[in-house]
Length: 85
Image 1 (cartoon, rainbow, N blue to C red):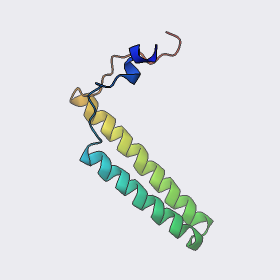
Image 2: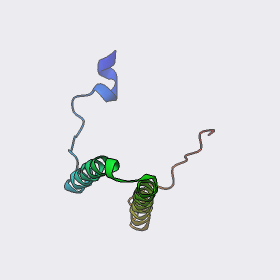
Image 3: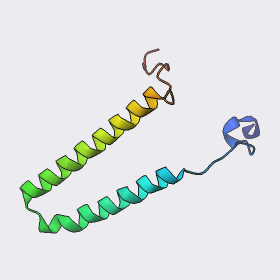
Image 4: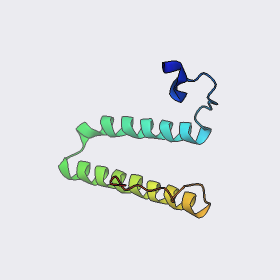
């Protein structure tokens, strides 16, 4: 039955999000509010520059985070991600 499933087990060790994750969520919310409130005051070119800058920043953040985790061995890169395996 469902009680045999690990997903529904009541003894899974749970830890809440770390403070760094909470900080990232807060920064994301603040940036989102700034973007939404600034949108009516920007012309098309400024809006495009703002969103491109934000996307480059987000991409670089993910790349740096991934590189740090690979260097320190935190990220498990040995797992197969091929959908056809």
